[in-house]
Length: 178
Image (cartoon, rainbow, N blue to C red; front, side, top):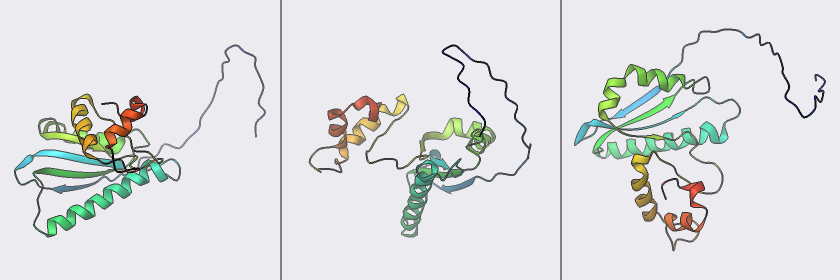
């Protein structure tokens, strides 16, 4: 490789030149809609992207696997006659690593509808990473996240809730709501 020179403790200025190919490419988002029974004009949206800079085991493939599994389960429920209370929209975004292009374009195209109808967006980008369980939410969902974590058993011992586990650890690292 290129030689590396130590410049000392002070600041350094580098002049870099990048030569790349400018390419226009078509991207494709994959969107699935399950119409709600009671509130079809209210949306719960789940999404993740499918492109990655590297092999993408955690980001984004664990989220893709979770979203595909959810889609299969919801399909089985639909085949038995079930419909959700609100419309569920499953989104698999393209070109996320290039500046959130897929999701941004979709939101810009559907902004008015989404602004008035969206109840929640759940990002499943990194569905699984590491051995712990963590969660975060926008401030509007803090209380919901806290209450839900109280209803989920600690997967390690089954005698306490996920909320109890978070409170026993450094809760600020795993639950921004707690």
